[in-house]
Image (cartoon, rainbow, N blue to C red; front, side, top):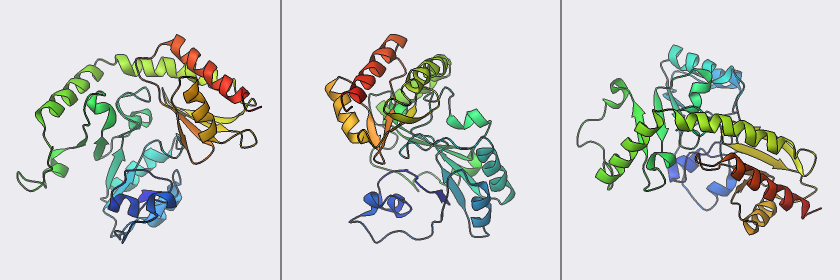
Length: 268
């Protein structure tokens, strides 16, 4: 079971359950056996789960969709449904996890613990690509030595970097920074609503900003911001995603948002 507008990667089984036709175009045949339900819709998920459901795979906050935050009762309800139906709850925290939203994991905002965490990106500390599947032994214990592997799996350098990143995050410093600076970022972005921005969604140092389609596309604003020295990622036409480094300062946030305001103004 997966959610509409999900993003979990670009390999063939993953794009098999993507609802983004640009991700599927030119590929196939697709892997069967997946059901797609609306994100944040508890009732739809409950109706879709049956005796053949083995897992529910969700982003706790949808990143590629534009930083879509679920209703507060959604993830707790998913946890309850999965437990009651003996279904694994897999949380893809590759974008949202590891202090980005102000908590170690985005699921922590709702006091939810999934059966499996998927981690990556920040786990490599910006040095090497590192990913991990994290679960208790009763889940991962079904795999025995020699039964699963990959060419670079268990790379000593990657393992050392990942372990160091986890040790740093255990101090809580970057979670606090993301929370405090995220509130400042949100305040600055909210001030642009009505001035080329129609909506802002954010959690920690992660924000989705919808651009007024009468002004410009997300891509046009993003390219103009690049000219001004700020990199953002457009998605779904009208949305920009802001994901500043966790070491950013308040002054740097102000500068970046000023460039954003100038980029918006340049299209008026």
